[in-house]
Image (cartoon, rainbow, N blue to C red; front, side):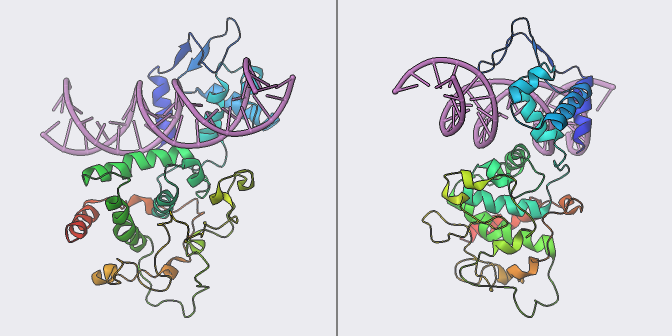
Length: 289
DNA sequence: AACCCTCACAACCGCAGCACC
DNA sequence: GGGTGCTGCGGTTGTGAGGGT
């Protein structure tokens, strides 16, 4: 969807107004009314110019000095989610869907953290994706998105299936895996090695933040880790080893070394994993036990 | 054509954490 | 230590588009 169209349409529809009162945490100067609703092109321009001149941060003073009748929070949100040059628009690609699913299984609703591994994507966008697509499917399957049933569904069915859709299957596997040790996360292959998360992880006390840039945490042994448990050189599938291969699908992780997760182009997003075929397949798997 | 429903998205809200005084 | 203000995060809401009937 072209979000700019949405924006323009909202504007033309007259959405937005001057708020009579400021947000509780956002005191306003006497006599100043704050605008709410969609941003106008003029406001966008003012904000862009101001940030380009003075940089990000200090959003409240920015809003005042730039002459924007917006809250500091509003300016920050508009900049981060929409105006920032690095913001990437367009559909969530299959590769990105895969990353989201896997990181969410690891971190839950920590959208900003997940967004760090998706260049150009905002936490808001990822959150919207999760709510509109994933939660909807959990609802269709009549199970909670956080239930073990749904987690297993993603782990053993959707993710391998998504992998299959992303790359297809090569005629032959590489002669030698790049590396494949028990101490290296397969996920390191999945993330473009040129990518560095945009935020500083070193300032966080979260143990999951103690990771090298360009890699996904690898502490498989931690108690809550149900994340990277696929055999490194084997096939994806259920615990008994038959799993997915019974469907003729060989999903060796190294098949996907060449996926470009930082690509700003491409259009693999057209085909979404959440289609009728996959729903049917998953329901079969679940009913089979 | 009109209505209804779902989807996708931007924007808003409340809260927690942090820094500063 | 307490108060205040700012920032960032996650949850939620409101809106138009688009498809189906």
